[in-house]
Image 1: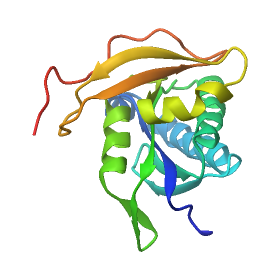
Image 2: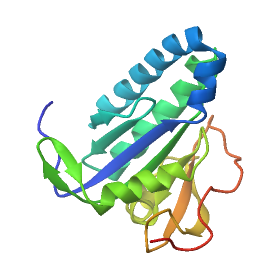
Image 3: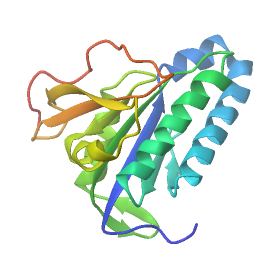
Length: 188
């Protein structure tokens, strides 16, 4: 692994929605679908200056030196996941958050990662969610026809402070989703 970015960085967490059910219903097809999923995510992260820190079975945790690198990676990844994996079709939810984190032994730790993971966890397959901090950094740099949909403030499991969440909208990507799976009030 080449040297990891440090200071203020952007984290990406991903997860295949309903992967357990997909493995139960399509065990043979899921072997190749998961391999293709892994390849698509690795290519998107690598080609946008990011690094995969670890895989989580059916997702990844990656770090990027800039928020726009992460945005470019998820647009590429979501498009390729949608168009290249059809048997069975898989939907990947993604969450992005920017901040500082402690680095130790080639891994990152701290509240910034917890928030990024929780943002991802309230989304739906095919949806990319972005924290308010990240939204502020990228807003003026988005490509034409790419925008942010304000989803409001949400309480996230285990976190005291709510997060203002945005959905990334880009051409050729799914745009409509059910309400987020956030918790009704703060938890501790």
